Image 1: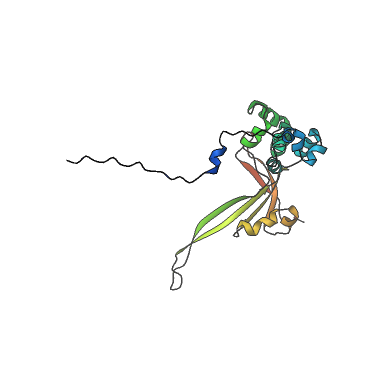
Image 2: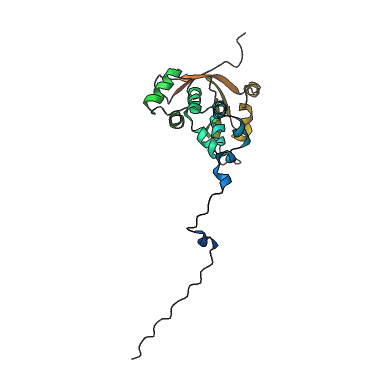
Length: 221
C-alpha cells in the first residue's frame, strides 16, 4: 500500500496594501499647527467670544446646527446653553409663560436648555405639516366605467408660527405645487383657499392637542 504524499503548501498572493506600512507610525505635529490662533478664521480673530455668542443667539436653531458643522470652534460655541435658552423661550412662547419654561428646564432636564429643545415635545414652526387623507366614493358601473368605487385623495397643509398664528389649506395637489404660498403671509393672503387663524393648547398640561380657531375669510360688513 502506497503512502499518501504530503500536500505542498499553498502560497497566498495578496494584493499589496500601501496603507499597512502607515500603521503605528506617529508623525510629529508641526509647530505652526500647535498654535490655536493659526486655526481660527478671520471672523473668529476679529470678533471676541461674547460677540460671537450674541450672533449665535439671534440665529435660528437650523442655522446654529449648520454653523456647528463648519469648524470645531463653532461646534463648541453651538453647545452653549445661552444660545438654546432663547430658542426654548421662542419654541414654547405660544402656550406658556417664560417662568414655566424655565421651571420645566430646571426640574425635568436638570437645567440643560439644549437637551430640553431636542427632547421635549414642541410644535415645529420652520416647516409645513402635511396630512394625506383618502376616502372611497361610490361610482356608477356602465359599459364605459367598470370601477364601481373611486379612491379620492386630498391633502391638508398646516403651517404654524411662533406668535400663535397658523395657515391652513386643503388641496388635491401635492406639496411641490403648494409650498410657495406658505412662504409668507403676503402670498397666503392672495390665495382664496387659504385659511388663517390662531391656535392654543386645548387643555392646560396636555401637550398633544391644540385648539385651532380660524378667522372668517371676509369681513361681515
